[in-house]
Image (tube, rainbow, N blue to C red; front, side, top):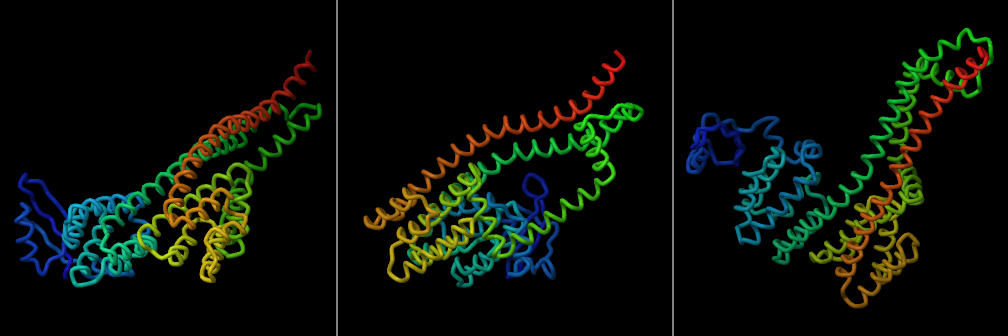
Amino acid sequence: MPLYEYKGLNAAGKTVKGTKDAPNKAALREVLSKGGIYLSEVNEKTGIKAAESQKGAVRIKIGSGVSKQDIKDFTSQFCTLQKAAIPLVESLSALADQAENETLKTALTDIKSKVSEGSSLANAMGDYPKLFDTLYISMIRAGESSGSLDIVLERLTAFLESQLRIRSKVISAMVYPIIMIVIGVLLMVVLMVFIVPRVTKMFEHQRKELPFITKILLWTSDFVSNFWWLIAAVCIGIGFLFKKWVSTEKGRRIWDTFLLKIPIIGGVMRMVSLSRFAKTLSTLLASGVPLLKALDIVKSIVGNVVLGKVVETAHESIREGDTLAAPLKRSGEFPPLMTHMISVGERAGRLEEMLNSVADNYEGQVSVRIEAMTSMLEPLMIVVMGGTIGFVVFAIMLPIMQLSDGFG
C-alpha cells in the first residue's frame, strides 16, 4: 500500500502535516476529510523516501533517530490499547498516526501494513532490528503464541522503565565529574597559555636561580603554549587507538576485566550488569521464552563480555543437564547470595520471581552506591583542582618572595 506525505487544514484553520498509507490519493483525501482535515498537498513517498519503509534504509536512520524513551513510550501506549481490547491493526494505526518521531511513524506504518497483509507482529517488527532488539522480538513472539500480548507488553514496559532508570542514575553520576574535569583542564590551559607567561616575564632578568618548582611550571607553560597541537593530536590518536583496541575480542575482554576490578567503580558496574542480567532473564522467562533461548539473548545484553562469557558457559552446562545456579557459582563472577537465590528459585519452581527480587535488590544497591560514589568524588575533585591551582600560585609566588628578600 502506498505511503503518502500530506499537508492540510483542520477545522480550526491550522496547518497539519503527517504521513499515512492509503490505496490512492482519493481514498486518503476521503479518510482525512472524515477526521476534519482538508488536504492542500499530497506527495507519495517514492525513491529515497519510500526506501525508508524498507528494511535497509530504516536501519540507517533508526540508529540515530529513535531513543530508548521513544520505544518505552510506544510500548506503554501499545499495552494500554491492547488491554482495552483494541484490534492489533487498529492499535498500530493509532500509534503510527500519533507518533511524533517521523522515523518511528514510518516504521510503525510499514509494520501495520505487513500485519494487515497476514504477517505476525514479531516478524514485522523483526525487519527493524535497531528499533526492536532480539529481546523485544522474542517477547512479542512469545506473547503472540500464548495469546497474552497485553501482559507481555506490560512486562516490557516495566523492563524498559527499569533499564532507563538505571541508565539515568549512572549518567547522572558521571555528569558532575566530567564537568569538573573539563573545567579543570580548560582552567589549566588558560593559566599555562595566557597567565603564567605574562607573570613570569619578571623573572627573565633575575640573576638568582629559580626554584625547581618554578622551573617545572615554566617548562610546562612553554610546552603547552608551543605544542598544544601535538598534545591535541596525541590525545585524539590515543582515543582512536583505544577505541580500535577495545573493538577487538581480546581488547574488550581485558578492558571489561579491568573495569570490574576498579575499586568502588568496578563494584557499581558489576551490580549494574548483574541487575540487567536478572531483570532481563526474569522478564523473558515470565513471558514464556524458553530458558536456553533467554540465555542466548541475555549474554549479549549484560554489557560486559566477562559476565557474558559466564552466561554462555551456563547455557552449555544447562544443555548438558546442569542447573543455572551451578555454573554461575563456579565462575566466581556472580555473588554467592545471588547464586543461592537462583538455586532456591530453581528448586521451588519460582526462578522468575527470585530473579526479579535479585534485580530489584541490586537496583536499590546501585542507587546507594552511586550516591556514595558521587559524594566521595565531589570533595576529591575539589581537592585535586585546588591542589593544582595551589601549585601554580606557589610556583609563581616563591621566586617573588625570594626577590623581595633580596631587596630587603
